[in-house]
Length: 455
Image 1: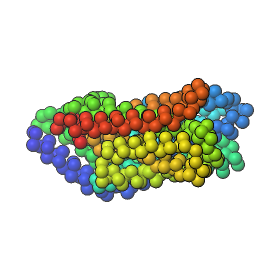
Image 2: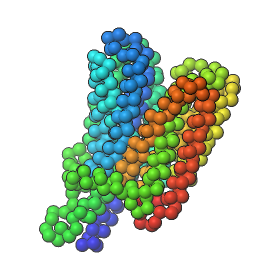
Image 3: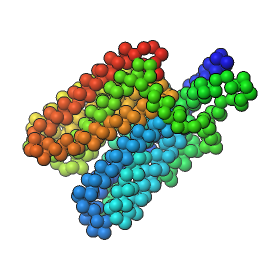
């Protein structure tokens, strides 16, 4: 029985290797478009706040706008924690389709919202889909990418998020001014009309997920094959197939427990702490960097110029970090990138000419965003397919607490008159990210062979 199981699993993995190569371009392209709309949806609220506050029929005030922003962040936290568990049980393809459907329909609800309360409900629901899409797409791309380009592929995928941020800023000028704030949310409905049908029609299922599911099935079946069972569930990859791998609940819980088995507990916890520090930086710096530079006496120009510059740096950084990580390893690169982020953040406190200020902002974007993305790449590298999406999802979800704390910390610094310490505070967070990644690397090396995660 054991030999039969090993042979079947080996065959699934061989099918996975060939299938991954054939589907790589389709997977990366379609996931990139999905992540682009994820970034567009995430940043569109900030781009429409002024027009929404001016719309008396909506009844939105600044306090309510802040609450709505928090609701969306909370939704992303819940979505990130739950999506990995779900997609490790039922598959990446369906996970992407469901997440895109959720945030697209929620965008339509926001576009048609008659009151601020309904709009807030829409943003909360959108957060569930937005939080779930990224870990699912990262897991999918990492499993289809060739080994020599896996980290570059994840970096390339995440450029879509920053391209979406740039598009949100531009649409905030071109579309909102001409057609009103609701128009940009109608654009956010596009994924359910385009991406979801394509995902169900042409997106293949992850062969690594299928092989892991087959191993889980054999583990549950025991000797039932000898008792006349019909065999493991069918490998699926086309729209007409069904996932009938069994109950998703037990498989999902097993995936979560696997993050702490075989000496992987410390690795998991250090990745969670790093993600907290990384998203604290991403959201804190993105929110308060213009105000902090103004407090230091910088002339930063327009907010749009800052947004375009920092996202352009993010796009370049994803490609650079991904390529370097394929040579050095994502843990090493993320560690170095956090340390360099601390240096550039401190240098922003030095008053310089406007062109040099924008160059520094570009460099902050280049290292900061890609440092956090390489944390996700490291998790995808360390954990096996059976609980990879769960590992990425929970790393992202725990980081969402930092996404909430970072903007709050910046506001607290200004409220207490301590904004002169702002750059030092964010630089300290980057140093903490460096330290926790060093600890993660140490824990990976000390983990017993045969643990639940693959080094």
